[in-house]
Amino acid sequence: IREEIISLGGEVIFGARVSGIEIEGSEIKGVEYYLEGDRHQIETDRLVLAIGHSSRDTLKWLRDMDIAMSQKQFSMGVRAEHPQDLIDTAQYGRPSRELGLPVADYKLACRTKEGRGVYTFCMCPGGQVVVASSEAGMVVTNGMSYHARNSGYANSAVLVDVRPEDFGTEDVLGGVYLQQKYERLAFERGGGYHAPKAFWKDVRDDNAPQVTDCLPDFVTDSIREAMPEFGRKIKGFDGDDTVIYAVESRSSSPVRFTRNEDHQGFIGDECLTGFYPSGEGAGYAGGIVSAAVDGIKCAHAVLSD
Image (cartoon, rainbow, N blue to C red; front, side, top):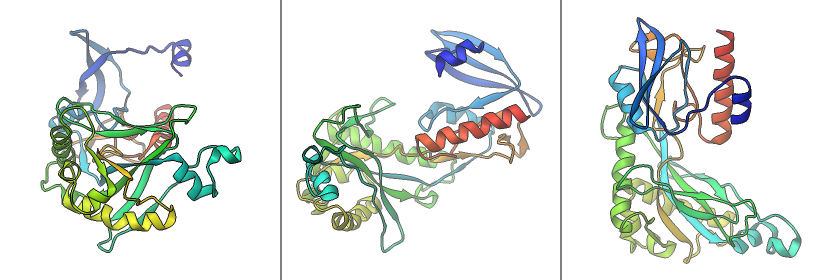
């Protein structure tokens, strides 16, 4: 993709930090960025802002500029790790290597008695759990699989709905503050940049404060209710020795930018012409594919403008 952009006359700038946007009236006029300590400006009347869901410093100065945003529901939870043979046997009846099949995956969901959604996300067959922190003194877990998918282990996020009423503040960045609170606790409980972990039996029986301290009580309670249900669908999913890692808090953005039908954002109550918040960071996607689709929609909006 990068080579295609360059071949068509575009430029890709690595290591740059966008620090401001220039506005005249209600129109985009440029963007400011820093590269190796030097300030640069690009004059433009079209800006597609695809910052991802973890650009918290950018969200703060955009809020302070009165760029229109709102609180948005997101999810929080843990990573659950199992032997890949357990997942294969639950899905195929036997380990995949004995059948000449790819390692098995799964997708699970249920709703608690209180109406909270609990679901698996970003399942990584033959993968591994990784620390994916983006800020100092905070720990976030994630999962990945190499192409061979041969680690011998499977993992996925087990996530619970977190709603704006759970944030405890009217600040548009309330969800960000909630994420940061528990990511700091994960750093403390893990003793640095290590994901706190415990066996499921200890999390279930409230003997794993290194994990449960890193989660809101309603998230822990919801996971405890959901795991036996998941175990009925994937035999062994809620086994005593399932390994649980905290904290998974970045599945989607806790902020949504206000956009009109042409995908353009707002400053205050007024449309900011030429400004296109896009993808997961804008609050209009919940994963790689949906972020790409929203990017396509914004590109078409720019082309048709």
